[in-house]
Image (cartoon, rainbow, N blue to C red; front, side, top):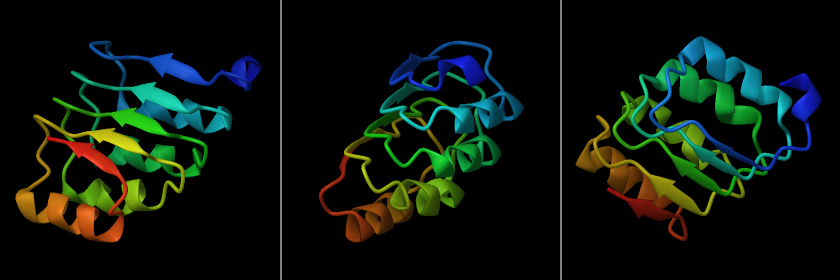
Amino acid sequence: MKTLSELETLSMGNCPISDKGLAHLSNLPRLKYLDLWETAVTDVGVAHLESLKMLEHLDVSNSKVTDASIDIFVGLPNLRVLFIGGTKITAAGAARLAKQRPKLEVYR
């Protein structure tokens, strides 16, 4: 992934990506669009996304993500669209996300 530092879009939905594999995404500082739907990604993997400050669109639907990832989502300053349907994010977690990032479009 080091040679792909200009990459802006990455779709890994329904792929066998692991939390460990997501660590390599920190080498993609220009990434704006990331699909991780239908993967085994957990909060451990989402923590690797913390450095992706240009990220605007993130889909973690039908993954194993929980409320523990809310702070990571809140800390992504350019995030505009977030898909969390089918995750283990609770209604309380989604409400906290909406309160802290009211302009973020969240799809459950």
